[in-house]
Length: 152
Image (cartoon, rainbow, N blue to C red; front, side, top):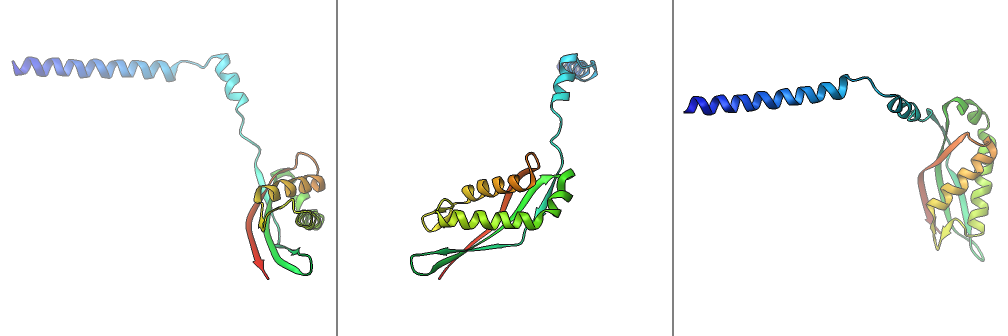
């Protein structure tokens, strides 16, 4: 009786393994269709990116009578790897655009949420300033790495 049970159990395992092998063989060994090839071609990886590091930018927040606080931002510009030398060559213009953008945003309070810096607004404005300096399609984004605020 035990031998029959073991034989049936072994046959069930053998049948399951055969079915699994047949299924995997059909899944991986059949050639892809034209539709599957077109889908793989459409899913090309994004172009490689490079980073241009910036020195810290310090901007004073002016009150009615005096400087209320200093805001320091360290940012990195994410560009296409092919255009990285062009971005590095335009680094002084990029720094100038970032400083002008930060001064204007702090002055009109568009970069501030009360007494705090609005990070998404800073990223948006700095990305727009970098795209204006480096041209369309070069800048992928601006990565804000450090923001410090020092009250006086």
